[in-house]
Length: 417
Ligand code: AMP
Image (tube, helix red, strand yellow):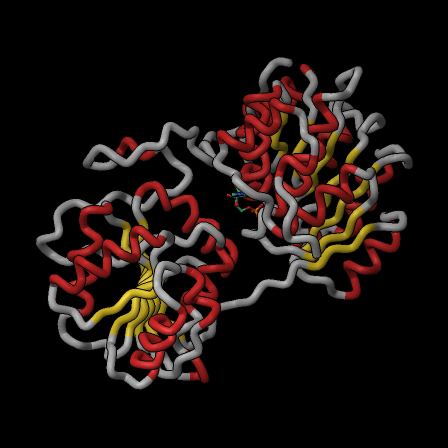
């Protein structure tokens, strides 16, 4: 796999690059690095990737790039997804990018009242670039004649394994009959059981294949997180470490500067700590690691470089002073504890700015991490609500001037072209 691709390698339209920057996407995730070139080459695709890997943007970005360059605009893409929640999430990502591109989308899903059906119908009649639909409701709308799929260029089946588990196989085949034979079909699935292979054989032509394997944290790790402000972090570390409950701990911070600063502060607090960073000589780093291994030193602080290198038995606690930018680094960091089937604790500090990053981690590991309230006397904490505007919390939040991700909205939306 080529791990060195950047977004500029895809030669996207400048407006799309602006959208990427504003969404805070700095570099393509592994699935994006592999899928985007194949999709741009107009190949069919079968991709094994879970939620949290960035799979949605992996297909949306090249499709959006294609739409904005189209001479004549029409319904270009149909995304079929198993649930209303997923359809809405995909729609929100289109909306996030579409804001810069003037691309319109609508989520078509069942289970709501007649007014929403009418609203969906009106939006569909006005014309959209992308429809994101659950199979049942799509078939109902197709039967009503309001959706015409005969000019669709891209069909995406998202979470295909879940759709088959929910009994949508026949519905998918029925939907495909409405589509032109000449189209690009992209199939995404978290798992690849034989029935997915069979579906792929039936509907894909000479597809590119991508498999993004992700590691999972060991079962023995107790994972917890605190939502808090930056000013509260150091005091909380002191609180957690104060009773010597954890004989051996690693603290991770994202930058060398933070590692050094934290080292100074924790020493002042009287903690038995040393820091490892790139300004140290190799011999000094090794000597610190040896002390830590031999249990002569109880706490070591470092950046992610430490998370991959260190192989020490019996680490009882990992603290993430900030949320690692790459979700896989979270797994590497917390994997330093609970090795060899022992138990360990991994605690992550989440400031307002990092909430979105932590949500990606939770998506990748496939579950929510327990959020522990701050101890008494620590004052207010920010509400943990990634994907919403942060101004609702008690104090003025850290603000980077970016548009919020995953804007929440209800029901379908439609913007003119
Ligand atoms: P998905 O796997 O598509 O559900 O995406 C998980 C989350 O990752 C979503 O919240 C996306 O907005 C976010 N995301 C996708 N690609 C990137 C990227 N290249 N950089 C940062 N965030 C991303």
